[in-house]
Length: 301
Image 1 (cartoon, rainbow, N blue to C red):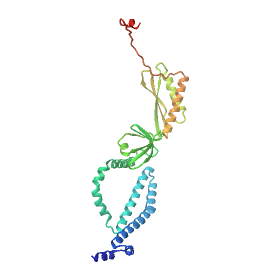
Image 2: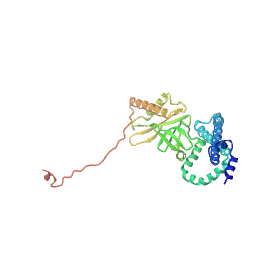
Image 3: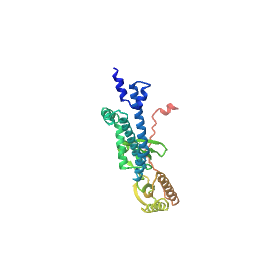
Image 4: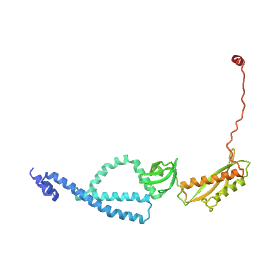
């Protein structure tokens, strides 16, 4: 019984020996390990944050990676620094081999974590595919299912999209990779279409000329590719002429503004030159029979 404290005291370092004067050898040994662990962690983490992370950041910038790709990679680098600091501190404090200890913990918890985090893992994998495939980037206007908006942030788990009503949507990455995503601004040019309905008695060639002329007049509509008009519909009350034209450097704001200005000018020209844009017409046919059954009027009188 008397040998145990003496053996523990022999194994104490300078810090433990100093603490032993105020407490038992066992407590002094535990506190010494904790102090060494914290000190080693702070030193390694501080060096990694001051030296390693700036090097990683400069390397990513040198490769001209997009902002949405740099952010998660920097997070992974930070996690690596923390992991390295814990591993070094674990050994420096005399707690044993950190990797061996973590292997046992990981094996015990892998099944439970996997079952509990199926959706999270799915979103994480989807986030990796988004970074690799780059179907969209921060600042792009995207549309999927019944939603649309501008991408504000892309992380490994979710993507944040600001709608045009200024609502913020936090979308799991798996939902985006499993859906059809339309990215109207991925290319440098965007083709726009609009169907003008004119009356059956109106001159189609005259209407075509007005539609093309107003497209050529608009400063933000490209001359190459040239605007075009095709007869695409024969409706119940109108003839549909589809206008097709291109804009450069598209954005949602430009899309709405240019289309609105262009349609307004075409409508004004139609009014000036007597081309009708008819309302939908509904024709009701049939008759209404009024029968006077005997005794009804007499009773009413």
